[in-house]
Image (cartoon, rainbow, N blue to C red; front, side, top):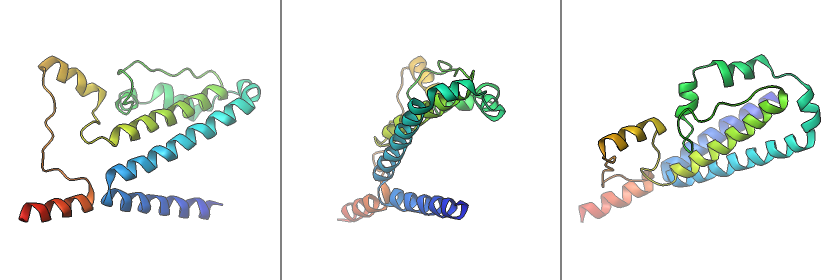
Length: 158
């Protein structure tokens, strides 16, 4: 089982890298689909086992991750929420799985945001943009993946 899991992870990583090189938007869309499937899987599991999970204590690793670790980084990757607006509740194993499921939803939103060029920004940088009343400037000569770069380089030579 571990060999199969490692092989699948290895294959997934390099397949995603190859997709990203061709088209970042395609790679992010694929990752969004994976995250959406993960959300759905956790949601079904939670609904099936809610009563049992509520009786079991939360593991120490989950308590450390969600409550005691560096929450700045936790907030930094929440692209769809205001900073410091989400502090998860962890009373039992049910809460742990709910938070894992909700994390998958956040990952899905992030992957969706990554599909629009120049759309992904730290929630902490938004305050600076509001204070200075400026926007981030996106260079016009950017290209999305190797295929797009080759096309643009051929067009610019003509």
